[in-house]
Length: 221
Ligand code: CTP
Ligand code: MG
Image (tube, rainbow, N blue to C red; front, top):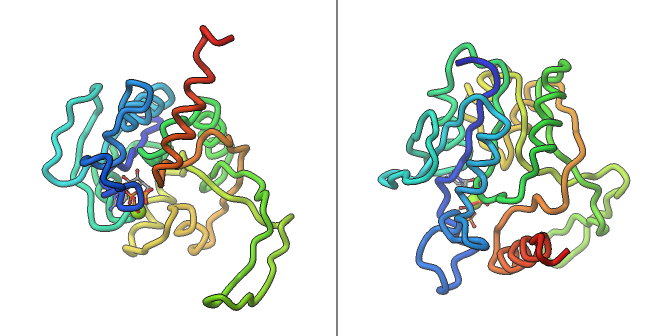
């Protein structure tokens, strides 16, 4: 199968989420009755021809069928590389998605895939930054950044398959994959992100995501 493949990275430990209330990694916690990882895998399955799921070593997959399950690494970038290693060679577009973003809409997947098909090396969903951002060293403010030039970015991030392979060939580390493509001079573009597509990082995020899903329930409309 060629076309568009997804790598869903779900091999993290969720340390910022761990608050004693849950004894499993955040991606395996249920959000409105469905595990976070299942929501993310389903979103990837809806928009892509194949899905590679990256789990922590030793974790068995018991969710919906995916084309491959592989063991992740110590860092997120290591986990993406583990997934990339089993993506078919004839894949044209690879979409990398955080399992920890359970509310990613199909439209966001579609937008990054379309932007790559239109010729970019990579496409990332972006949102304007509402707060003023300052650079600090300890408690001392060093600089105030020009907010109009800033965006915050999400996953799914779409890539021309060869561009993502080249970017990861040097075993680089970055908090997102697009940064590795940028570092090699690749053309990375932004598409419209979705405020609901935030990453579940802390217990507070989990509460907010639950409230959003509750508000979306049809019986409330
Ligand atoms: N991830 C991964 N492999 C790692 C680290 C992270 O597959 N070695 C995945 C996480 O499972 C998550 C996504 O990358 O879906 C984004 O990472 P993050 O939100 O930082 O999750 P964790 O690393 O699990 O959380 P924390 O940093 O708080 O420990
Ligand atoms: Mg992390």
